[in-house]
Amino acid sequence: MKLFAIPVLALAGCAAIDAARPLQAPGTPRAEVLAHEGQPTRTWPETDGGSTLEYTTQPFGKSCWMVRLDAQGRLVEAHDGLGAATRERVQPGMSPEQVAHLLGHERRRMTFAASGEEVWDWNVEPQDVSGLLSFNVHFKDGHVVRTSYSYITRGRMFPDP
Image (cartoon, rainbow, N blue to C red; front, top):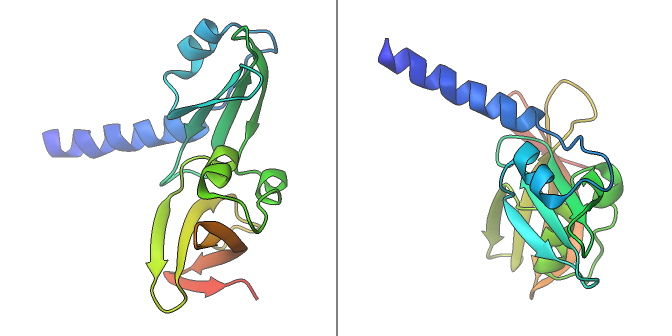
């Protein structure tokens, strides 16, 4: 009985984390954001004195909520850092830190000796319901060289053409 209860609780926790999304109105104080959302995965300082709170659901989820606070600690906006518009902002030449600031913590990092690339990936919302979609950022010598997508269907991975 105890063994059954542990996996059920673990799955319930994953469902709650993946479904969590910022719902506060602009102007909400930081303390209320934290009370509603909990502690962020990471906090990014911003050049204007504000900050961005990162709430990732990786490695199993498909979102990363970025909650932007102004210099007074009030909510400015919240968006999914793994949304299509944000993924499109990843460009060749960006540093790993710039990419992480946009997309949040990656699901996995892999190094490919033959190409000299380090590839980070994130689970993202699939285009269809037949498989999983992974967004990949390829780094070489500490900078983005390209991005790609991988589709995982029935246990097999197919790169985007």
